[in-house]
Structure formats: C-alpha cells, structure tokens
Figure 1 (tube, rainbow, N blue to C red):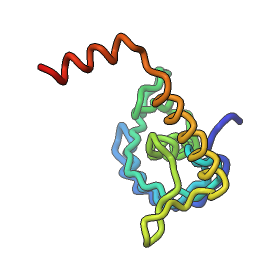
Figure 2: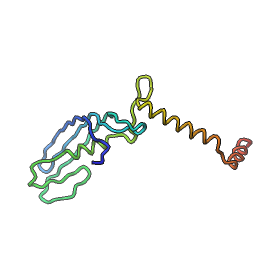
Figure 3: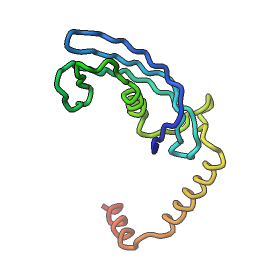
Figure 4: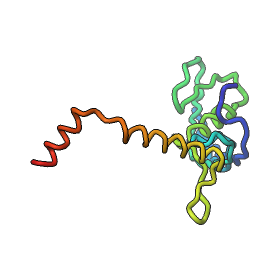
Length: 146
C-alpha cells in the first residue's frame, strides 16, 4: 500500500530443486520497475536484476520463518512466492534512484525541475560567500601565513 514500487515489468525465472526434507527455489529477476526519481520527483523505469534463493524446509511442526528459510508443514500443498519476489525486487533497487544520462552525458531528469534546483543552489552559494564569521577569517589568515 505504501510502497514506492507500484508497477513494473519483471520476468522471473524459477528453478525448483526438490529433496526429501526441503525445496530449494532459485529465483532470477530481470526487468524494470516504475519509481520516482530522487532528484526531480518524476516517474521513470529503472532496470532491476537479482538472483536469490529461498529454502522451504518440510517439517511436521510449525516454526518461525527465517530470512531465506521458510518452514512448511506436511499438510501444505502449495507455496506462494509472490511476497518473496516483491521483496527481492525492492531490495534490488539502488539506494539512490535517479534518471540516467543520454549519449551526450546530459541528465534525463525533468528540465524544469533541474533549472529550479540550480537556482536554489546558486542562491545558497551566493549566501555562503557573503556571510562569513570574522573569527574564521582571522584563523584562515594565520593558516596561510604559516
């Protein structure tokens, strides 16, 4: 409900290895998800790719789930991987999510938003140049002289 990933197109390859006491599921995720750019707040398609493994252990008693181990009782006849797949998609996203650049090295972010950001940065830089603490100025002079 409060996820940053609301839509996307991700292909999931699944390889299932069955053993007497466990199932090993290898997942390979590859595709794109539509997320918001951290710089310009515009939506864009970000490529994602991940390889993960989930282990389902067969046991007659119920256990708590661990990170990559899920315990199944003998009465269960199906496994649901949808939550695991969703979590692995979210985990494969980089910490900083911004538009890429074109062939010329220019950002693909929204030009109007970028121009507003530049104006704010220029104003901040101008304010920093005019406002200085005189005590620091004296210390900087001492540093330059020594």
